[in-house]
Length: 234
Image 1 (cartoon, rainbow, N blue to C red):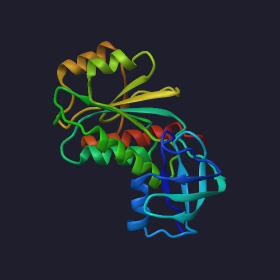
Image 2 (cartoon, rainbow, N blue to C red; image 1 turned 90 degrees about the vertical axis):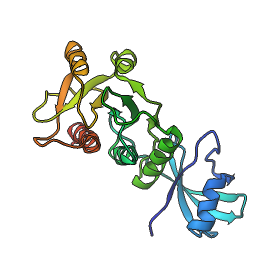
Image 3 (cartoon, helix red, strand yellow; image 1 turned 180 degrees about the vertical axis):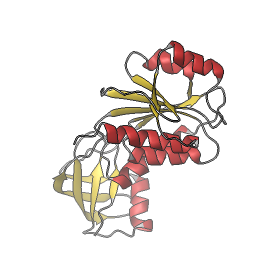
């Protein structure tokens, strides 16, 4: 039987050996959607400590009595990967957040490029999407998300602590294996001339994705996958 996983923020509940869970959203899902009953086992994680298998000893509308069964092995990304992607239209941003969480991106930083298709970003919705993706894929940590920033701010904040890489069509540079990598993915219309000049002035390396032209959301996923595969342990 598949074990369901649920994120319990460590500022809400402490995952003790024996405790009462009071999160109304989780309780509603357990009772009304999944129809959980006493004796059901679930995995709880807080994004920082161990994943733990619990048994539901008692459940009501307002609380559930959780009893620890066993500790479980944590699964976290091997690299600290930042995704700087130009905001996209409609639900394409949701797709990027979901799939790149599954592929191991640790930090989502939406950017407002010169040719970005939109400027609005629902941070609360984004955080919900990455939490659900982490729960479903078996990941033990929750990626960070933030409000959009412009290209200049990317360099001001991250240039000295993250190796920044620009995604390009065709061949790219040889990327060194470092602890923190930042992927820059442009909008559907491509980078503007001023942005290209900035990348050139900063001597930013390029990551070649494919011989064909990829959609922006596809490029984000392809880049995350390529780095995850390139720097995964043998």
